[in-house]
Length: 444
Image 1 (cartoon, helix red, strand yellow):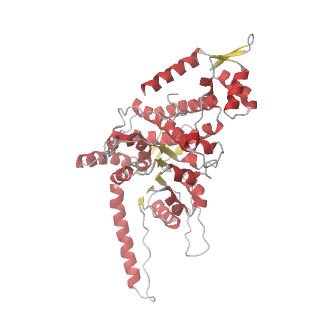
Image 2 (cartoon, one colour):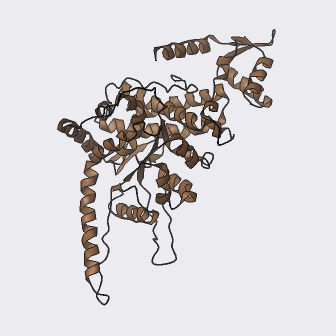
Image 3 (cartoon, rainbow, N blue to C red):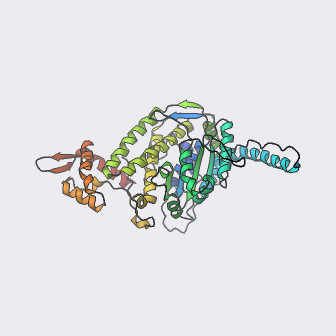
């Protein structure tokens, strides 16, 4: 495990080396303080540029780079708005396509209004919008999904500048959970209405979504969706409050050279069709799945383990996109970025929701929010059962889980037991891992 997620400092993003040039290009137009928060946000936008493409996940299922959702969380006035400028740059082709579609809709509206009540009205054109406006109702979203499915299964993309605006898209806050899960799972809408005025249809919901919000509105919006699998499907990217500096961050000027280079990458996404297996990426995800189990054992945290499953899938989809952007070639730097995305998502979720995930008071202060801790690090190199029990009590964990935790640590060869002394001792393997992690944290 390369990264520590229990501290207030974000896991440091690895150097963007060979194979991540598109991400570096996009970051060239953002102020430096926003580089790490923005990187996870790019992949839903880029993924929406792919259709007719599937990749095999390590579990042997085929997945499309659709259903990707990411939520940028930062204090008000903390430069979140720069992201919308980057979205517009990436989606210039979407805007051009949608203008033609909207022109057709406007012409239909004029013809319909110009004809009398006794004359036949023209049928509404099957409008398929790629960049869905953020002020879109749920019936309109469904109609658009039906049109895009008829057009070959295109993914629609939506960028929501404030998380509360998602309620309208989902048909009300009580429907948020169902809608977000259906989008992530590439499920069918299953909409059946009793009247002609309603929208009836059963298209596959192919959509990618990005959301921006502040910590307070984020906690309020998701507070009832923490334990039903909804919020785990969303990638979170949290930017802590920065230092007070009397300097306005600079963002890019978007020169022609930037757009020319960006278009080259977007073409690679657009023309990629068919089914693919990226073996290097799948091998990485298998290894990260083992790391997530190890992390859960060290922290004795089942919820963290459950959350990691979808963090792995989301990072894997990002890896698929990186592979296509890099002319279908895998590199070490791409793998390092995918690994960071997993830990950064989990770290962000814990920074925002840790106290709520413990089912404590929703109004808890920021100072009380803590992520899961590596409990073995908090014990001496040689310890006894009573010391672990005392540690668990201090962390409000049940005593009956102590022996099960010790069995897991023994199984993973983190500790050894001496029947003569009744003491547990950290193994050389574990001490080496801890030392490497400490050295890495110092470098950061």
